[in-house]
Length: 81
Image (tube, rainbow, N blue to C red; front, side, top):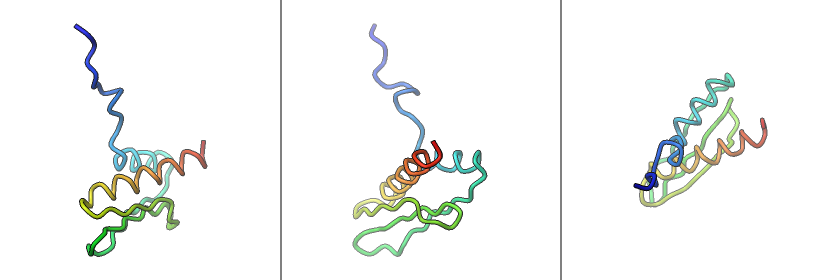
C-alpha cells in the first residue's frame, strides 16, 4: 500500500508547544495574553516582555492562540536564524 498521507513528519508540532519549547531552549520568557471575549478574541504573545505575535479570531479562542503562537515563532526564527 501507499505510504500514509498523514505522519508525524507531515503534521509538525503544535504551535503553542513549539513556542514554549523554543523559548525554553533559548532561555526566553514567554507569556500568552488573552483579552476579554467580546465579539473577537485577541491573543498576544510576549517574549521577554515584548509583543512578538498577535492574532484575532471570532469563532474559537484556540485558533487565535495558535495563530498568535505561530506568528511569534516565525518572527523569532527569522530574527534568531
